[in-house]
Length: 440
Image 1 (cartoon, one colour):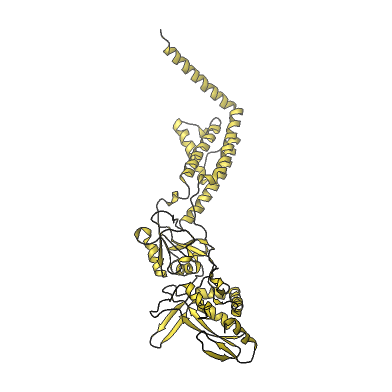
Image 2 (image 1 turned 90 degrees about the horizontal axis):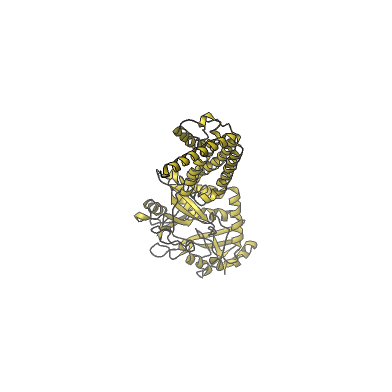
């Protein structure tokens, strides 16, 4: 009889008959026996690993998933006996895909499946899942940014660099224009004044300008500009630090390849990536990423977060996880529809998570380090700052400078006299030109 009916044994002292999928019958009192299917994998045996001892003719099943299941089963208020059966063919290779393994529970060939089985809506039509015992989602695994002598230019776009330089010079020119009539530090030869304009404007970048300002309008312009410089430098520093940690790649560009775990193509089938290559183990991931797309490898690996955590526990110094997406529901244990064990095992998983046992098990199996880089870099990687993001800042400083310059032109007697003298000089020059151009 199916597992959903066996639960009646938990509340009776009478002997009941249990029908096994193979047709054999056994009698137990207040106990459950399970035939559990487990996947057979080439890599990522930290989650579930199957080893055959030819000398003793015994099979050992280990891994994080197995430990979580056994801990949950032992905590139940009733006894559950179980035996693991690797889902493999005569050659010791997995006998099918994960969907095939899950479907064996629906066919009653297994009473449960324990391993790195992802919860999906399609599988839930045939079986029930416990709550997940691992992280959710899919992540992108990329190499860290290598040394680049021009990386300091990347945080800002070309347009933003040019606009910033232009406003530096414009601000210096306006301050010089306002201060020159009344401030000796802004006077001198033509080249000295040009040098003062550039020196003053770019020294504000590190707040190291030494010239004393006299005119309040010039002080107003500099106050606004220093605020803009503070925002620019802070944004630049933050973006540069991120770029030195996480490598930016163009996944959809020509010649870029993406790796995925062999047998789990369904995880990335909806992410619209072109040029994909299958791999089976942590070592193959590292080899492919180290080569890169141009040398027969890949630019990034797309996989579920638990697998990437296993990889980063070994290679966190050279690689990082970015661009996580909640497109999967994590790993869980599989039981037949209506099984009481789904609820009971789920409750034990909740207790283990609350008590911190799951994290301790992850550390034991090197699924997670005490401080894991991927926990700090699971967001979208840093992008170059463009002019559009700072248009408001430049608008403020532009209006402020124009306003100060307008007031200066209106109320400055010295400047008006200077302009009058310049206009008179220009007038005399034009008069001389007309005299020379008239015929005798």
